[in-house]
Image 1: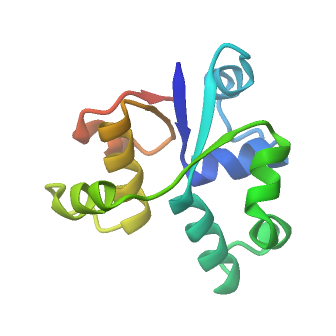
Image 2: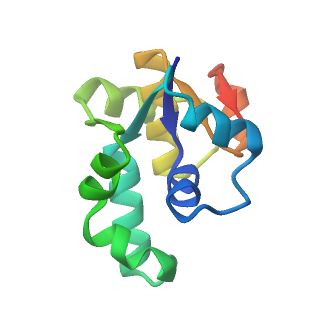
Length: 128
């Protein structure tokens, strides 16, 4: 299975945080699964670290690519098609990072690892 990590799932995985569900932890740790991190998550981490909203992620924000590569995860760039889909998603969910992850999951046929129940409204498979 190909899994797209929500930003909090990535950070919790890196920190060994217990808020990451057992099911999510097992899915990320299963060698059979391909784990993917979106450029949107790097953007979100860097932005929120700069704003002081993620004080525990300063080191990750300084080298998201290195942290991702160190885990053996793949990356997913943002394309024009992803951006167009994210901008056209229905509903009033305003988080641009979440909208991008939803669009990428839809277009790339990825399951999202997230505790965000709002993702369920968009017909994506969510693992938590």
